Image (cartoon, rainbow over all chains, first blue to last red; front, side, top):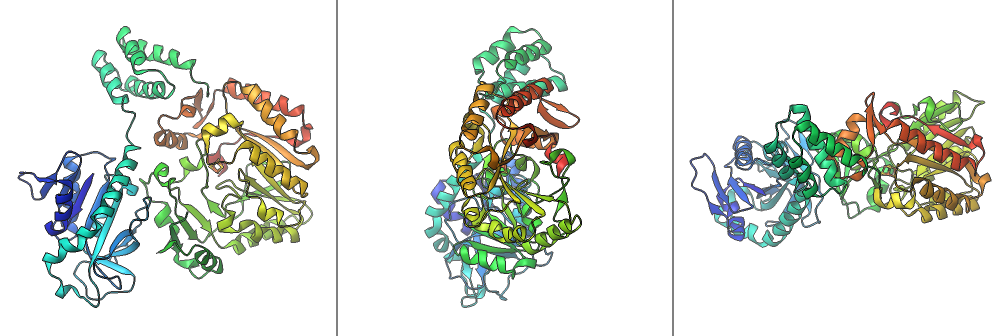
Length: 268
Length: 336
Ligand code: SF4
């Protein structure tokens, strides 16, 4: 799972909770990670956010990895410390909107986020404000299904408590109380992402077969399709491996697999 | 449970929108300029969204009643279909909606009055002739009626216009909205079936075959005509036995005179839809069946399709007269 925050202070509660370790990289972004989680601090603004998301994808280029943006926001009427999950993000300058699908338990109330170029004190009712949200969504949905690209924002300022009064050292104390729910969201997102993973044996069998014989591009596609079908039709991994090892050419493997499947194709 | 309702700006003040929002107070309303902003973006995952679809309230613009292909009718000469909703409560693995739409969210077009006015004008073009309107191609006609209140909104129109005929295609047993009304001769509720063994494996969330037969029974007892749609026919083990037993179960309970029509439809899927469905469910056995792609359409191999259709036809003709049986040939893409 990938995490992005704009500031290090926003990242600290997650870094502590997930035991993320700072990597010693010569890169424009600071990367923290453990075995399954990676976190990058983007810095302020849209451009930094886009670059940071792309950088993080480059570290772990998997198209099923879930993404979570965690950070602070202003809000027209929500109380300080209130946590919100973004169901719509809009850039009022460009008029562009995106609507991250909300498939997870109702852990946080939903909100509409306006991503603005400059910090604003012109708060409108029922709207949250930040400076990176739109860039985050627009970039991350290039690397994962939009269902797995989410953002949780904690209110740090509102009309009664404007941004000018906010002190950075408050950040962790605003975010930390929400960590248990954020962990639940993370776990739901991770299990959903697992559903998109291909059959665990598929790539193993294909790689094994490719190492034994040479396949043309067309034969490679046929092999991939037949192996996938073989696994869904209940041919065991051992049986498929046996076929690829006993045959002497790509063509005969394909023919034999094809013949083996013919008897199994009828729907049970 | 609906947690999010996206609302297109143009219908935000529509009485049906206001009513739905009142009935779902726990849902978060999210405005959108156009429903396509939510529904159409590429890259969405239908399979994931199916776990918790949101509701989108929108306005249907343009042509709302469209002609259906000639091979798709059930005896009428003038046939149109309309879609007041996109997507379905159920999750049939063979459903073309998952190949056709980028999103699994339910879209409800709330401007029923515009649908009815289009239906009215199509009906008026053939004053002496029955004109058929088919609902339930892009959704299930009854399954989400508790949200849409489609039936109670459309039936009065058909009551007042006896030459306009309505087919409600469904797998739902939500027949209350019909039972609350006096039966109409020009309305047919058409139930789709596969044998229970197939339904269990492929029609996720769909009521059991027996409860659908029971719903048909209740409707016919109240004087409503029903239809039977054996569509798609699924090639399977024990094919004849399973389909024979399905037909027996239906016809031993539903009186023949209350059956308006029976139609048979083969499994046909436009290539791009099939490809998308296969990608969504790469280990689905159905998609590894004896299928072939011909002229851009994926179907069972011709000899299998012919044989299975013939078997169903022969079984049915032992139970119903030929004039009640219709064969539908068209793949969804070419239809809509
Ligand atoms: S009931 Fe019909 S519309 Fe609904 S999922 Fe099944 S096939 Fe599709």
